[in-house]
Length: 369
Image (cartoon, rainbow, N blue to C red):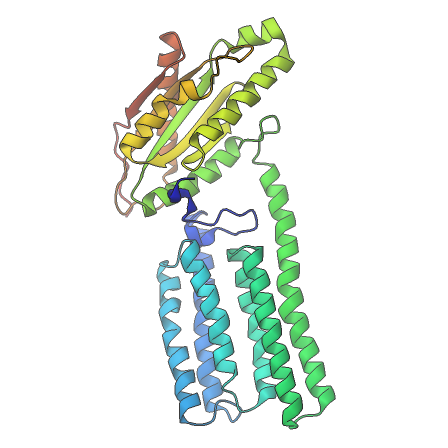
């Protein structure tokens, strides 16, 4: 697998806002929401500093001030949209959990600290939407262990009755565990239904709708890695003759075989989608040389001498060179690339098929303003 496509989380349980994969207005709303939640964390920490139940002693108070102040850095990064990609999302999740715990342990009142542990509900929602199930499991284990530790300290301290401490622990654990778990279950159900509408039933590849969604993500990854993008349209040659001679079942088998080999050929560099009866669209990222080579070898990659029936393909591809500062997906430019690739594919088919035509886009990708 090419490392370029490992720069954003691709698990089916992951919400991909942090990698700029959604619409711009939604991304801004999500980032502002996380930014305000992060800012609220610092505000709450400073408020507890002024309360009688907050940290006691110069070291504990300095520690709280330090954590709350440092937290303003990721807060600002969220507001300006600089937290993106799998690594930064994971680092922020770790910071949110560890920062919350490190502040709560400075409280003189263990009961107040137990009440403040409800903040883990917010971090649990973050782990649910931005990271995968393993990271959510880590968060739940960490938060549960921390809450139980606070309960033990509260029971041994003796400031509150055991029934009061246990009742508060029960409420906090229910919120910390079951709210993120319920969100995770609901999200997986909704995601499963949404994903099903983006997959071609015959080949298991993306359909046209799925291709557009994935193309936005590939565009984002290409921009982040200063890579070029190639859009290729692939059409099976003389497919009507295959259907007429061997029947539709064999024709379907040829479509499945071609789609599988296309995806294997671009695996790690991009995705293949079935966008017509015997037509496929491939989106790839890479260096100019790498893309030209991968496109040129597409016709050979989907054909094997032992195939029965033998079915070649015609390929047309348009390349989009990297342009700095253009991070937002350009729907119009991408549409023009598909149209250009389609014309090049018909040129290849007119020349006899079983070949690939490649050309750069004549209109450069515009800069984002």
